Length: 367
Ligand SMILES: *Cc1c(COP(=O)(O)O)cnc(C)c1O
Image 1: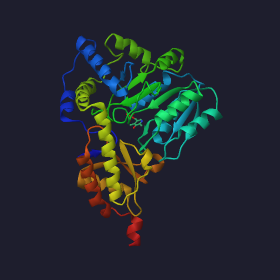
Image 2: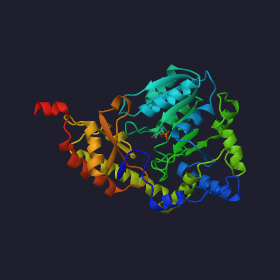
Image 3: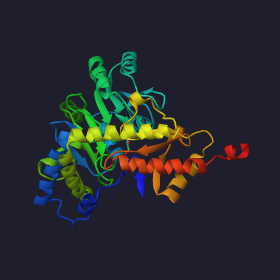
């Protein structure tokens, strides 16, 4: 199968071998050494001097951790949403009692720094700004550095960033860009199976964690930090994914961070060019199009559901559909993690063969 969805992504064979390793005592010395190796191995990819926290949960758990560890009920929050995951971040904050204002951007577009400035000026006393670095539902990357500059120039708000589908694949300079919490998840760009969220907290975020009163137990970052100092996690960790990450980081170090970023940019460009060559239209403008996932409009006369089904059943290719209001309107091709041009070429060949076979009912009726 050519699994071309934006997570979970395929894992290299050596990573899968590592994932199958025997269990160890998670309160013993081998685990302490593993935890230390992983946290320090992740720092160069996060571009942070902070310890990287490992939480056994999916990316959404990491987003929830970013909120509950830094905020209190009633806190004013500006949620910048450009798609389904931005909406999810806002919803988590709202459910925990934050006073959330949503800056909603049309799906398929990026948020502009000046829009964020205007929203910050229109409100007051924001304690946090929530931003999705790479919106997987629309295939758009926000100009995070520019947005961060505006957030810090205009306010004292913490910048909480969903970097689930960008960190490790697209440049994100956590410390230098003033990102207060950066969250990613194992099954996206990290060559490993799902089950692990990885987070970095700035000094300001750690200070906020002492004052925050949102309820938290499993996701309490202070508890994770204190246990990490003893070489442990508060509760039983997802050992197989951690074994896999150890092997994956060795691979990633060998390829090199900047080479990984360049490969993602190159493969994304290759994907967009190939899609256009098939006569298809991209959802996003190329200037903001994501280097980890490409969203493509389902062309007039094509049945989007049938397209996915025939690609999977007849051509061994799995693509993602649209989410929320884009369901049936777009399909998405994932190109993050363990991916190179030939994987995309096979997907494009499958698309070329399948498109003429999956005409919509209207198109058939008209013919
Ligand atoms: C995948 C993804 C998530 C959610 O991650 P889960 O691991 O499914 O909880 C959140 N945000 C973005 C941008 C994602 O791509």
